[in-house]
Amino acid sequence: MKTRLVRIGNSRGLRLPKPLIEEAGLKDEVEVTLREGAIVITSAEHPRTGWDKSVDLLLERREDYLIEEPAPTGFDDEEWEW
Image (cartoon, rainbow, N blue to C red; front, top):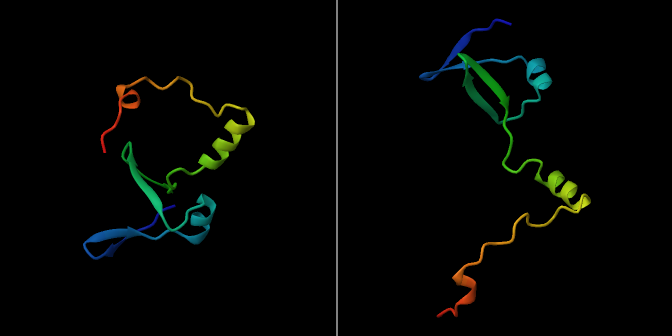
């Protein structure tokens, strides 16, 4: 598809047709990156997206434990001063 860049203040913008936006699953926020000379627009993922499913899977597999024991430190063995 060919389209034209439009002026938006000192910048340029791009109008995307609604069917294209819907098919790509884009919402209000997008990630824009430059890859090998091409501008790539992808749906912005929020931090920790999918963590809830990953935790459920770990619990289901009974893998909700530390892989290694915590490294011992003097912090836990010494008396604290308040």
